Length: 433
Image 1 (cartoon, rainbow, N blue to C red):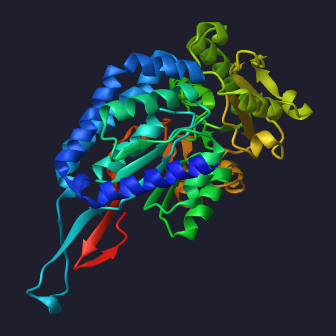
Image 2: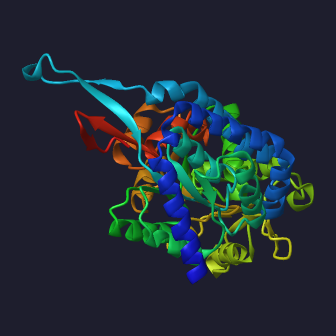
Image 3: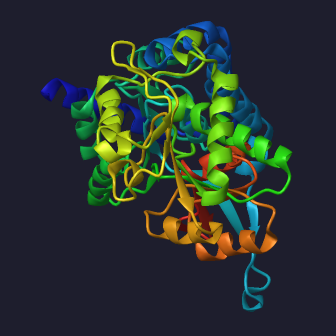
């Protein structure tokens, strides 16, 4: 324990010295590091695919789409916009101060601590690093110990390609995380569960350290009656891909449960069954087209959600679980009890409860009686219903007639703001991040 504490303290001290030297403020340095990270990803693409398969059973196509491809895109976006991001912005001053002028000057925060999650162990580790470097900070990255192969490749390759005086990797489990949180950082970025997020925020509060928490939530999909049968088929295809496509449901913005009208439910269930078989074959486990559960602990957690008698009785499709291979096939449930664990905890797995309502307008009440979702997905052509969803629910975002596309927009400008810019106005600092 003492040895780990010394490593953490020494690392923080060395990174502070690097930051104070001013080297990371240089735009040339930032671009060099971003280019080096891009080279790292391209040179080690096959090794990254292998690590993702070892940890999560991800197919190379999924691995490229959700891990490698998004990072290359983010790096290119950062390199294209970095000069604009660091340029001073004209500040507005009251006429009383004429002829004085004001500027907003972006400044790096300092040393940033990043905790990565296990479900996207490459992209959710390195994308915050891209933002932190683009903002001119030094970085400590703690990969998830629950995805050991990915953690290992990050720890091995980062020092080979990037500036070891400014970017450090510290591996380990809960103990090293606790030690890191005891230290004073200039910014903490955490991706993970609300439970651990509370601990991170509590620790950060001791030093008044600013924190960004990327947590989960139960994301519902509302499926309104669509008059055109082809529209309904398209909606089901998008829902199926949004539920099981991203890491077999182990994604914070993935579909968690579905709300439909009673009269539409039989048609929806049949379309779900057909689409699942079409997308993932009759035997998804043998097809290697869906990721597996990350480890036995999470496998048992998902399995426990199905063990309540009324929940198990509500299964209308699937149900096969292989603990040895950590694989759970796509499972659809019809009307599990609303007070059951599956309807009150974030599922984070390949289970899709379908809840029927007499009128689709009731979906708003169902959503509002549960914790605020990260995203609401709604398939409807009713413009008044769209306005009602927007005005009467609260969530991190709303997407109409599609799923996951809100995550495909350019994100790096936001990441840069979160991970390192403070604004200097007339010699004083105000939180612009």
